[in-house]
Length: 237
Ligand SMILES: *C/C=C(C)/C=C/C=C(C)/C=C/C1=C(C)CCCC1(C)C
Image 1 (cartoon, protein in one colour):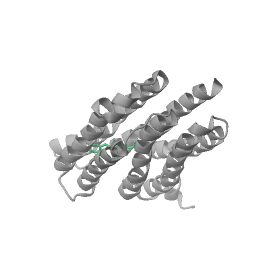
Image 2 (cartoon, protein in one colour):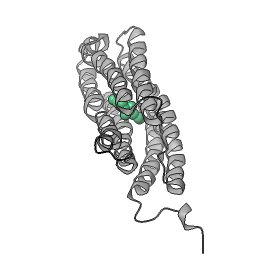
Image 3 (cartoon, protein in one colour):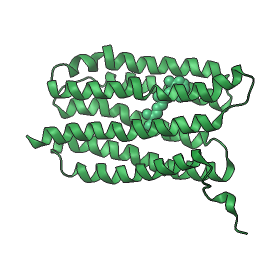
Image 4 (cartoon, protein in one colour):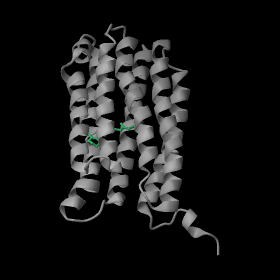
């Protein structure tokens, strides 16, 4: 008999979700990089950045998928290395779309977004690998997210974005991603770590990974499509 446990099984629905997302990341990378050559030159760097985000995620998903299929464990290290690279790139994107529209913003906008991101991810990582209790890691992670939300809803970038109607629209969609799309991650964490512990059970890695995979699909590919649409509309005229 062949060594079947190294291959995807039909009953492994979390494995199937890893598989689908890994392929979707590769396909969207090709799409974003290709489309980047067709938009107005001021938008090219923005599309390159979203293509890099899905490229980095795609590489990590191939490893996460194999790790999951052959061990049945949560690929925590791969997942967080991916997030530590891709979330800052997405934060740069907020800055880039303002710059692409010719709006001057100070670089402190980017630094505030980066600091919020690092606090958010370090809190989550420490909670997941057991450096901190899952509950305490969660509280730190939430604090980082609040810093980001504050900057894009009330900070300098939000005030500057209001000055251009096109950018205002895009900024509103990106805000929705960060507020609603990103909310899927802490929900995954709660279902994976907090609720099982309240019931005295171990971590629920199936639900955790399924929700994270769905969240990455939405927040990387949909995020990229919003930027692509903005670039596309702006290049037509
Ligand atoms: C491409 C990857 C993205 C956009 C990842 C985003 C991750 C988050 C928004 C994670 C958030 C978390 C909290 C707000 C609380 C603590 C646990 C985390 C790290 C899952």
